Length: 410
Image (cartoon, rainbow, N blue to C red; front, side):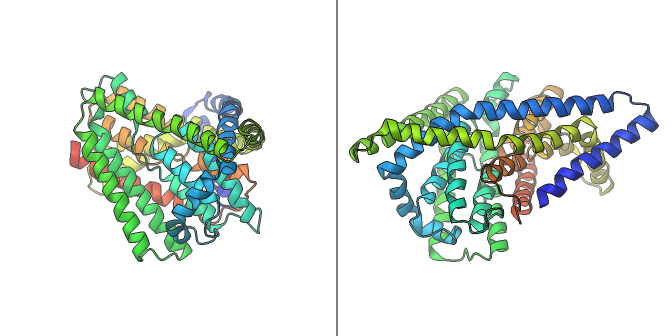
């Protein structure tokens, strides 16, 4: 329901602003630009779905081997003490907890192509437990907030972009990104737990969150001691070695259980193809709405309004130039990436705005895209508090990014 209102708002706000620009500013290009955007974004949505088909087929095939080989169930039992508290609606030891863990692990390592299929598999398994098939469950919402908050330990792509844009030290945003994304994820868990009345003050959760904090601190410390070249090499190597280890490990587990791994792979791959087709309408809807909003100039007006408000309140407006990346990130990953590159091009890769844009890009994920794809894959229409919790986690990440950037680079 919330997505419905937001989608309508995209079009209405864009139309009103376009009329104002046409009547009072004589801008004859705004409506053609908006119409061009609708066609371009529709094509983009289809191309994204088409591109996902092969990746989905691959990873859902691998996941099917792991499921039949018993690895997913073993993972589910190991994670059961934590997941029974974060996801109380999921039965203890259910295979979906393994899929959730695989998805979150892939996200942490920046393996987007692997994370999405695993996430869609988790959504399908949670949908099997859902009694109201058109309404999001608490577990689905918690899972999506963990995704949209964007916890990433190795932001390789951002570091590569900074190197390409001529940054003196491309890795200087690494630690700030880790800190910002950690606060975003932690805020997402706390906010969603508050909505769902989940008690986090217990021995298991305190030990888990404390352990995660320790791991994050260790990763930050270890990578901060490497130079930029070695750091990128280690990051890419760790990610790819882990990815290939998962594939081979699942195959070996299947062989050990005397599973016909080829047939199991084909069975899962077919599900991947069907899933890719199902998400096309949802992607078209959300990307067209975002495209119209951008093409009308509404985003530019929003940024100018924020700059005026911040100045009127007597605060420093240095960070406002980086806000397009922060505001675009929940709407479009590629759009936010373009905003980040534009900020580094306009202000310089080593400027405060250039660095802050990179931290914004790494601190959260594409909330509306994730909601559209994941909920769309299982036919969820009523998202309940998913959008609210996701956006509040994004807001926490944005605020944390501003303070952290000021601390490191201000």
